Length: 166
Image (cartoon, rainbow, N blue to C red):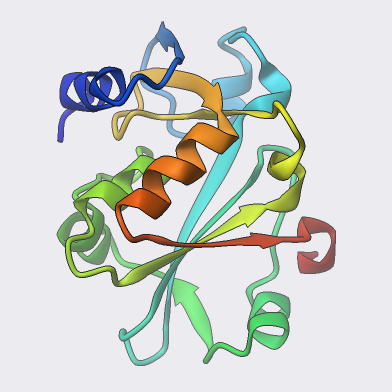
């Protein structure tokens, strides 16, 4: 899905969002310099895989947080993790580097990817700022809507305490 298809998809499902088009943002630093609404909601997305290339994880945290993959491994009982390749990112989620988003899970037809979402996004009324699978725009939408949408599509979603990951 290109970004227009994402917008259409969200509108068909009556999901409210605030859209901001902008220059390509390849990092959280670049994104923070754009003066987007709701900077506290901006998400950082990390796409990783296990050492057998069998299990894939999308770790989505608030933009100011970090993750140590060895701590994630220990907490969630995974095999050794490394960043997925650009080829894996494109093959599984249909995304290019710099455009990673939980909405990319909509491309994951075989349900290979589990989403691990920062539990700070679980607060009532919380918003999340994510790319619409293209880093030239940012959507702010209710986390609850995103979670319901992805679960309706059969996606595995887990909430994590990001403080334990660093």
